[in-house]
Image (cartoon, rainbow, N blue to C red; front, side, top):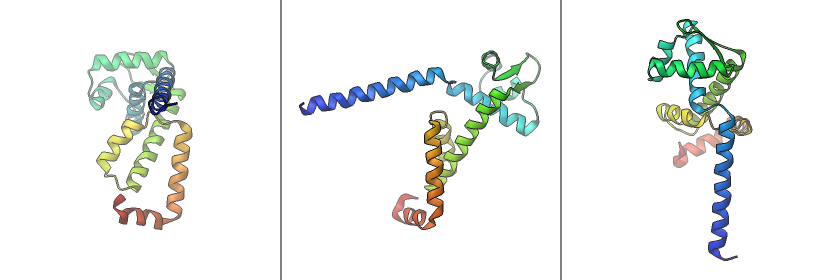
Length: 163
């Protein structure tokens, strides 16, 4: 196989990888839906309840858009929603929200360990948290424990310009 053929095979594999990722995303909740569950969970933790107006303000979207999404999440069994009443996460919705919050926390800690500033780390975590495979999350957590077990590694990394 010539050089061009080998490169083409690599591109085919990449295309298949992209296709598989999109198919698995269709089966899972969308990132946007997960964001809603995460915000609702945070609001309930903070205030004891969440309203459509609260969600609208925190997500920067119109109240009618929030209402549509809440109806979808209600139909999916992630929350209990009655118009003009509070929003309650079901056990299923709370589990998804906790998973997102945990992934976000792990990513924030990792980014901090490697010297990424808090603002950039938060933005990056928001972008990545919805797309991590559970195995990847576990491996990342293990790697962080490994790094913490030898503080010299992180010190050397920082001194090398990596932090």
